[in-house]
Length: 453
Image (cartoon, rainbow, N blue to C red; front, top):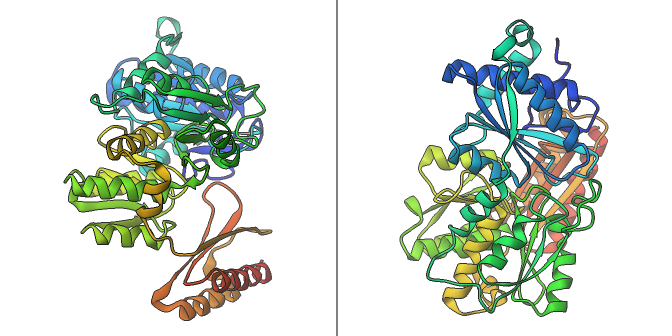
């Protein structure tokens, strides 16, 4: 077959379910390709862990992927509904050869996606994804199918969710307890709808759980990390100490403080990184963050004698930079937080527990800690949908507007314009001294981009 478009984006394969690249036929070929690729390395029937979130189309792709794996002689281990980081952990802990997650993360239920992890629990590097694309487009996986006793099989991992709950609880300091702590958990009707409340309750917290009634169509719908106002309202209603708002596959988290105020990934990183610096646990005194993280985070680290390394947007690029440089803490403003001492990918539950340990040890409400964590520089993010996606070098009016904005801001701000890695949108970020100035500059760039479209 011939692929009409690039299959893998910045976070696996993603698109409208049952159309384009996200069809059961494509899922079958992906399942066969990952098995063929793994078989060349292990010289035996590869073991492939498959998990999913709560989208109605998950059944479609779970079946198709499993069929592809079995058609190539692999052994499928079905974990059913579990967070993305759970599949990464189970793949590594069970010494499986590949982990596959069927999820479109924060997207609406109509979309779905396929993310792939290697045996080490890390997402596949670009070169491995390129090899998979070539296999999927070739006839190799059609010619090399086994028959008879060499055809693969599938089985269910009935204890998968319990394995993950035990793992997450194990990342929380053993000398601390959540007894007496009131926590609101919003699971976004997604993959963590069962495991998230269990983790906090088993550690002793009084849990109010919302977003835990998935129906296949309500994942991320006016709830979770995309709409943290619902968790915030519940925190105020319950007079809770903290709120946890997860996205659909629970690899990122937005935290709500005791006053019902949103605490984003930058603030959580500031709190965790500065404490790790003081305790000499932050490797090379460096935090890895993306170009989107606020300048105030960088300044907060500098005050503690630390530094920040910036990389491209996307949690996979954060992890790549961390592994390459030997760092152990990184993340994104959006709530992807990676604690490499504990996990191989962003994990909303692990991150929440690391933050809770700081709140408990210091005996102060999160609202106080967050207020002191960093001095946020005014930042504005504008997303615009354009008719066609093209390189910024082919958008002269836009590049001129960007240069003008950078000149006006000088050393007092930043401008970042980039295409979304998962959606056909141009993202315009401007940081500067005043909200009024950055709004005007962002509007100038937005209007220029629309003229270039």
